[in-house]
Image (cartoon, rainbow, N blue to C red; front, side, top):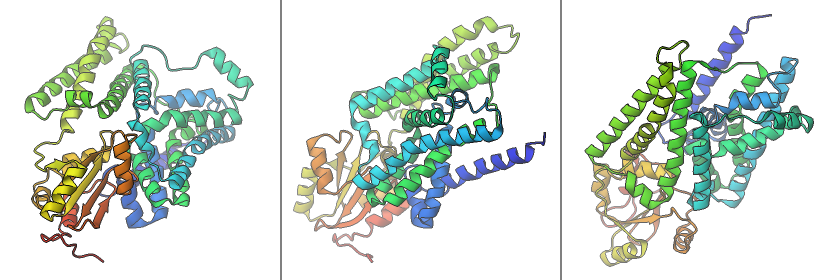
Length: 450
């Protein structure tokens, strides 16, 4: 049997280069697709989408499913590598069959799929899903189909090409909430451009990237790490990460929860760091106790149970602390009050449409708006903030229609006559934002426009 070292090396190099392309540029996660599209064109943006998908496959709620899923549709037990590759290909095409229509529908309707996170029932369902997955990582139950169901699937196409394709559809559904800001940014751009070709190609490429690990595992019989104390560490860390993701949905949708955990005081940050350290220390003891013939083996379960609460609480508090804007000096007004004030004082207007579930909106709040240079320019403007967290609200819908807002974030800069000078639909670095503000002179007139 020929050595597979050259093939393995080629695969590893490819997997390292593709994510590098996905992360290229200076924009945020949600803005990278737009940035690549503008700088390099549609073809490169579609290729980069493959990288976005691969990065998303490394999230805790997708990666652990790889060996389980591949074994169910029979790729790893195939009689030949060609059949294993074909089965894995059918599985990946199933993922693509779920994601590609998202791009088409987004382009045709102009709707941002991320806005579904404004629905409290969707948020509660997602939080429940992630808590269930976290519980599995902590050992509450095994994440595997019952043997009886597996046998039944084998008789109705569960094992085979049809079954692989259907399993791909199911995996795409499970993975959708885990795709994070990458997919949100892509769909935002697609919705604003309404380019069906770009939408379908980009989402198909994204699905291919998401399916890379599944394909390699099934096609080349690559065994992902199993057992051992270090694997317990991966499961523990995945459990903490999944639990945080569940809570983050709740925090970003429900204002009382958001206000409860989002503080900017140094004391709060230190307490959060101490809790993380305690949880991590207990988790390490749990992992060490899982080693073969460990003299502290009896401490594994109690240490794991003791580590869960401080680790999750600490991570939630620390990330919320780091994400809380500090020193924001811009004074925000409601839309009606702000426009009235701008008209009375003959001043230009800055309008920010954001939401608690919007990652790029948080980046603006945390990195751009507090910037001293931005604040120095913004004092000339009347600043308006529209909270679009609940996009089913009648007033929110009215304002989105009035200002032709398709996705979030949307930041508008208007001159003193109410004419739109600049519009941003992504995270913007402070220097770029300052330059945009300077396009409106102190007299309120737009300058430097092509």
